[in-house]
Image (cartoon, helix red, strand yellow):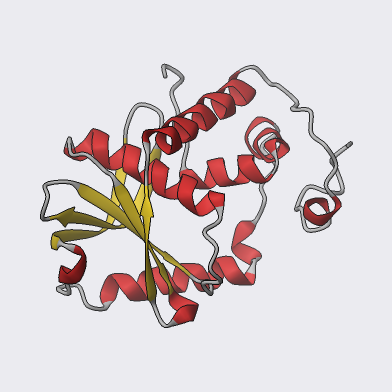
Length: 194
């Protein structure tokens, strides 16, 4: 994508929450100030702590033979930092992401999309297949959950990047439906005109 910038998984998650996030934050340049949110602050602390803990620990029961921690990756349309890139015994790789959350028998689509973004980055930077990813739920005693990553999830993440770039490059004000449950907690609710 010849546009001079790339998309992060955070941009995609905001876009999936509401397409107007992209417009307000990246077309009008109105910052969201996400760093003020408690969960965001706590999540960043968890990531920093996990980078320093157990650097040598390999999850051998899931076939990990090596890992890299806190890896910043980029390709022609996407960029982001993967908490851990796992190198598996079968020659493939897998992203591992820490979540400051409890596991409640549900994997949100946003988690899967974030892992798919990391999968695309790993595949293009390491030239290795990514068939699955892992989530660690820190508020559920560091429960490890394996997520299958199919090509359709990777294609969806790539399509989101294309739509975000289109909104930004063409100054598109996206049409959206009002969603009271989402709109009430939205940073931009005071300036959004339904």
